[in-house]
Image 1 (cartoon, rainbow over the protein chains, first blue to last red):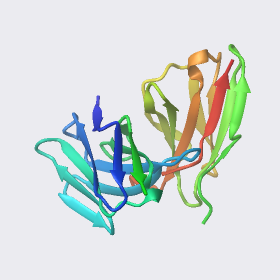
Image 2 (image 1 turned 135 degrees about the vertical axis):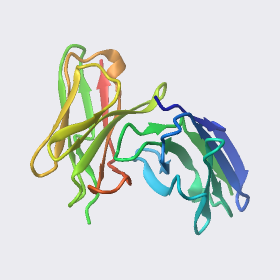
Image 3 (image 1 turned 90 degrees about the vertical axis):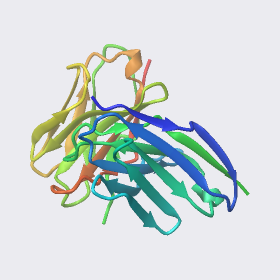
Image 4 (image 1 turned 135 degrees about the horizontal axis):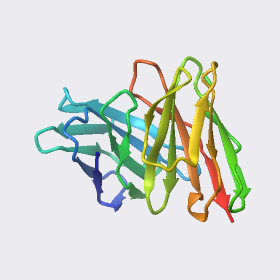
Length: 112
Length: 112
């Protein structure tokens, strides 16, 4: 089955700096790659997603890149703000809500 | 539009008991997926229901079961509870033709 690895497990940046989180996956049939942000006491919130037919997607300060050949995808957050502090999860699935696999999470801390 | 709601939010049970958790999806969403989140194992897929049928299933023992009603509301049941079942149980809903999943706040189950 799918195995998703996520790095780093913790990341601390200064407000205004960029943050990058990387994930690798093993199942070449995976075609859907979402990123979620989870704040304390809340469920994961989708922040951006990408499909295997796209190499990059951007939404304001957040961007995701996908390298299908190398089976890795990354989340980039620019101009970080203290409210970006949370745990971020990457995930991969074959689509149709079929057995989505999550990375272990990255705890991002943005220092004011 | 109201988000995904889960009840109860907190639950304390003892070993050997059974528990039923409820999830109401976003209006119009017919797919409901369930996940278990623990510090050690992270987010793990339990199963997914669509149009009252279990469409996908993760790698959990048969003590974990679920069902979906005609109004798309879903319940999951855990029988013969074990200490290791203590976790945050999350449900997520999505539109019939979309991979995008929206999570509820979760039910925190503690097994004593």
